[in-house]
Image 1 (cartoon, helix red, strand yellow):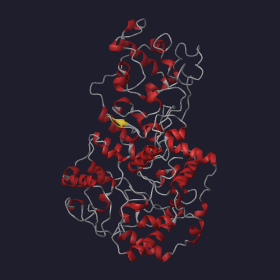
Image 2: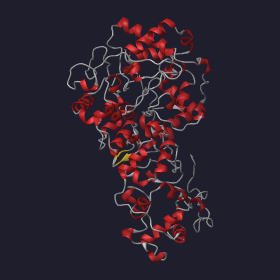
Image 3: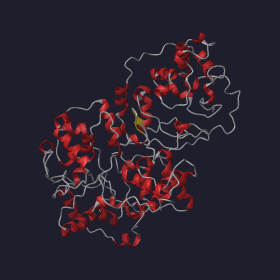
Image 4: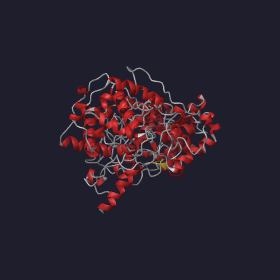
Length: 571
């Protein structure tokens, strides 16, 4: 492994990582996004309208900390989160204390957090082991979407045994991987952080402890989660806290009681909830209200060296200035957001632009693109490996299908190796309405009645031969077997469908879908007298029958080409 010595985690502290803020998305104010991501209104009380606009994501829940995390990691994390996980959004809240008091606070908080668990650590699952398991985890990490946000540990060519045209100079490869580490969502030493089995449990259901959706579910099976956890333990591990250290730790009730008081005094409770089963804690930290904040003050959270009790965020100069600029214009934060603004802030907050582009911005960077692979044996180009763009997606997809994709694992591209993450309805449920409001066709008209019989002929071998590429329900195509035609009318809006058939590259640049009506003229003049609009309406009428439609002519009579492609159903 070329990058085995590239450790993601402890090192020189660096500013919080927010990749999407650098894209220049329309309708996105970087300072406003930072105010939300850094939970500024948790301590600085703001008007309800301001909080509603910012929609700060909930912080990780701490109720199962003692079951999941090792005491040694908790101590290191509390002492200096900015060094334990460079690029984290977690501030250093103890750095302003005198050394003796900071050491005492760390121990008290560690015992308090360890007390917030009703389950004994021995109940956790045994970690997965073995060379095959490690290889499975290695491929999963670099293939299913982890490296869209986190840094890869190896080149795509090394993982997938492919020649992808990457530079062969080891120093150049090492530089590229190190650069990706600097601009990626950071990973700590996961082996030192999690108790045995806890990382796999987290990967199976991240939203259970991190409800904000910043770490989404990748729809892993238990076996996949265990394999991925084993791999991550091996590549991020530096100083693994072993069983002797865990056995030596005994929760001290007096220290835990004092830690609970610290949790309130330091303002930890302003962001973090302790979860069900633990008594709620109210923050006792007193901070100026949001309306009273001085954007140009030399002290406080925005200073490089804030005085206690202000936390240290280690923002970059650009990040500080973005926050200050928004604070100078904070009156506008009382206004509700528009649908385009909510779309932009959600895409940035959840880093959706790591995989998807919208209006020409975002999508996999050149350094990450080779990790997006296809599961098909056929050459489908970028369409077979890169997730679809989101430009105009609200005018493209029906509301019911958008809901399925966002919250219920809806998928129609079985050839994509990367998986559509599940962020949770609370985090993305609003996107369906917002996308549709932002992307509605202003001049859309309902479909005219079409001749379904003619539509069947048009998609068959005697017409435009759509079955050469598209599957039809349980029947594979005659060629590469891409998206299922029986599901199109249930997914797509008529207006987008019509415009797409007339000009495929106009709505999907780079597509391999050919134009059968160049300049609006039908290339099959023998059906419906070559009337373009009638032909498209006929195809729509036929596809609207879904699985009840009779297969197109030629599909059942001809055998699929050997080796033309593979079909994998993720649903």
